[in-house]
Image (cartoon, rainbow, N blue to C red; front, top):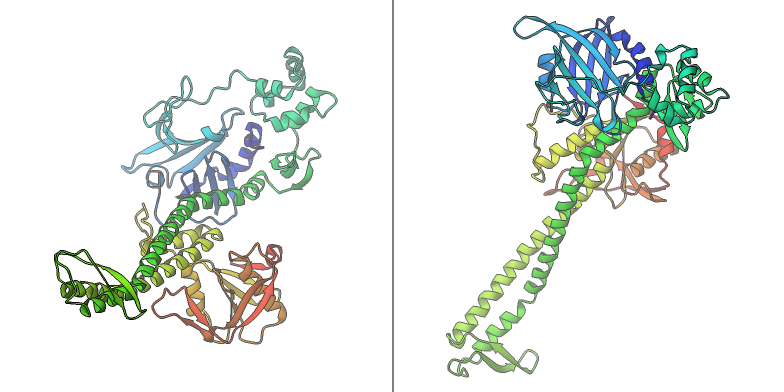
Length: 550
């Protein structure tokens, strides 16, 4: 990735806008990501800090982030120790990937104090550290001694990472850089990265595209900022300049580049972290229920054969005078089928007592059939419900996942580790077509019930894939829908279902007035009538052209 020391140094120039700003709000988005709201120059700025192994970074963001309903991890510590503090200075440790914020404020006992926020952006060694008088107060990632000197634990002395006596190229003149190139006989990108601070292989490789290597190197490190996302070796990347990169797109600032580049990647990573355990739990429950169903069906088959117990009982009563003493069986004529039949006996009892035992087994089996059928129906309903939840998780964003977790906890399928905080208001995905037709999409059962049974009018149109789990889609229009309205809504219903990879997906649509809840079943299951069916080829690209209403 392009976030090397020299990129961070140039990014720091953009972050100077935060100087004199106040840290007004702190949220921890995940185990590795923090969001700071900083009030500076009469504006609020969102500063994202991530120490993720894959996506470590720091930048200002204009994107929307979903904070957990209850504080996690270090949130309360950070709010106590640095919320309300002023940012006095922002700088990097030479050209290393270490950003430092000097902050000052009044502590809880009313004393003025100075602290440092240190953000180390170093892949799997990334960290977020709070220090006071060079002593670590807390770190987001606790680490023992991972090199000769550095320990990331509370009360340890903080030391910057070693720079291995590398040169800071921004402090060197062209002549000095020429001398170093000649003295070290620099002829490869590895030679450059091992000799100079803050230089990534991406920048080093560009040096050897010039005729005079040291001159090209000097030119690149002093190049005007042209924040760019591009393709390099079939991989998307970014950097602070555009040196004839393939498929390059230029942005207004380095902050914007990082915001655009990482937002979807980081969101997907956070969703993956949230959904992995959830999907595992759902699949485990489905497997358990399928085994239970198999066992119930076996028991039902056995119970359905209970007529043989009645026949045994009747035949024993018809032959009460034929039992031999201590006999474990008796062979009699089966007058139902006109053949001989051998009936097992309990030798402790006579034929009348044995017949009563068989009649009792017969009555018990008849009762079992009713009970087993109820259990089978209930188990099938649970499998259907969890299959629906599984499909919803695959199409969910972070807010949807939180709602699904709350629903599964309420249904006692999972137990959330964190205490329940304030319940979030469901955020319905809403599209607005070119003619301003509003289309609402329910991405979980809470949202489905809300838009179908509470937010919609009887004459509005409802869409859902036929014979499969998927989202409820409602077109907020009481007039007759155009063919374009129907095709757009059907496409959305197909995309937000398990059939989104299929072709010619059948989508049912009918008026809200014809949607009815099923008595005895969860509210996410409904019956419909007066429906019509349209066949649609799902196309996500068509959906991206529709405006999302906020």
